[in-house]
Amino acid sequence: MGHASPPAGFVVFSACWAIYLLIHQSLTYGPWLRFEDPLELGVNLSIIFAALAVLMKPSSLARLGVLCGCAFTLKLIHMPFLGNHLFFTMVINLVIILAILIRWLRPVPGQHPAAAAFDTFAPTLRASLLVLYFWVVIHKLNWDYLNPQVSCGFELYVTMGEITRSIVGFGLIPVYDWMAYPCLLGALAIEAIIPLLIWAKCTRKVGLMIGVVFHLMLSLHPNE
Image (cartoon, rainbow, N blue to C red; front, side):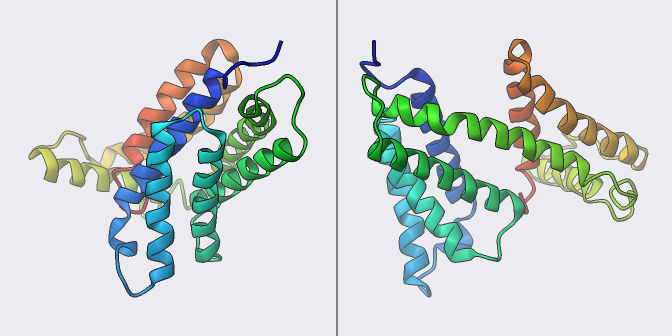
């Protein structure tokens, strides 16, 4: 028996992807909310409207496709000047668009189009996330990352401490020189364990919670 409605996984993913893009647009409004480049301004605004449309109806496959198309177009305009994480989101949007097109051209009999598209792109996205985390850990295994004098890891932590101090008025995140190596090794360990927890079904929710908290902390830094 086919799906009478889109699966819950598709609806949750669509809503979360729209929320992520809205948050990213709100955090980066300074560079793009200008009128020197009408094309870039228009594409950025289209992402906002498309994301809001998805949130109004996250079960809509067409709305998700439009949102991913707008987000992919923006990253394509910025090529090749993209950070690694932004390039990764461009690839994710492309995978979703291709999956939607495949299931539009070759629908699965008896299955809801959104369910068929989700079954097509979800495995690739899951595998891509694990591969991403693998290389995130691998590329940190070098002497510069483990050197507090030049490491981005401890610099990020110090900056987060300064930002939270300016927001709440006191040292919510303690910063001391002796914390450099525990901070560097701790970040490395967390990024190594998150994909392992996500990979195992019995610990997936724990891995997602740790990942959300960890990356929310990193998002305090302006470069993130």
